[in-house]
Image 1 (tube, one colour):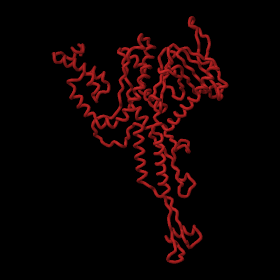
Image 2: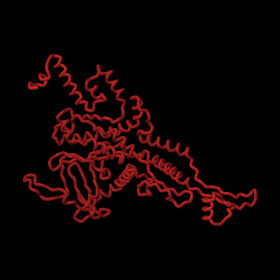
Image 3: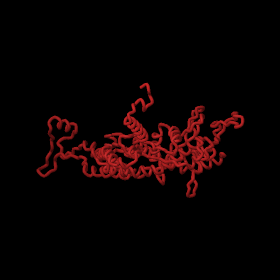
Image 4: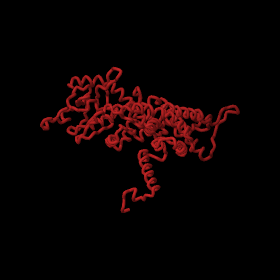
Length: 470
């Protein structure tokens, strides 16, 4: 892409990119417990008993509630603690795909769920490293601006990726702009607003002569051979809306009521004495007399005058505020489709009760899973294409997602025991609450059956194992 064309594309996508990033930044602030209530404190929760210059209302406590992070991590742990298992109907291929996805596949899936909840969509970028190994990583959502077609297919036509990078030569930060298509990537850099200084990043890629293998120099264009744009979206929902939009107002209400409550508790300690016809002129003398004599000298004009001492204090509507806090917290978990950990006190709940507890969270997790399945399929097919599998783009990919939830193991074991005679070994192994790897469980059971049959036929352990030496 030419510089002028890239400059025009950057300018045309800036407004959409800025709107998306502002929304993502807001979600991140709430995820890191920097709610709007703490804006005056630069995002830090502070207790300040004398923050305002008012006689009766001096307290200005600003402590934010971390409900957003709780709801997001709750879903991420529920959906992605155990990564989805992938089956392409070939055990050797399954093992290679699992090895390529890596041991930290579950952590990456967890991060994808968190990013999608905060941004509405998360992104994976894959590439081939210098050793020819397939690699993939999670790209921060605020770096990616996708360009889709306007038809019903909504095909990904290109990806703009923009991020800051420190130049060690001059110690300055530059904006790096990558433009990815299904054939190549072009890299530019800029520093000034408006991209007036946009230029090619000519030292980014090294080019070689295919025939001789000789190095030809460096440039800003990278020709890949994926046949598609090596960026995979993982949308949170149909409209790619972050979760915070569903309950941000409720969190703000809770913060305001809660901090107002704390302020009143601090302010109620401020007692102002109102003196009528005090028989003196010096307040210091008044305080000294109060401490020493526990009495006050008053000038009375008669039996009907209003001489005396009154107090001004702050009244706290405790019941009303407690009720509002409880209602608001309940609504936060209802609208956020999560589980209130303080609202479940039964230690021996039945399986039905536990399922009811998780029903709202399961509904949200199922939607997330349905949109993430397509992304996982794309990643698996990209791996198979790298492995030169002939039918990589048409081969059936089966995903099995496992939830991480509290369950009644005794009840589950009883169910498995009752249906054991009419259920396949595979289903029994999957349903056994003591089993974490159902495939290994099947292998172990088969080994036990072989040994048991051998013993029943009078064979020794040495005969079964083929070990004559014992």
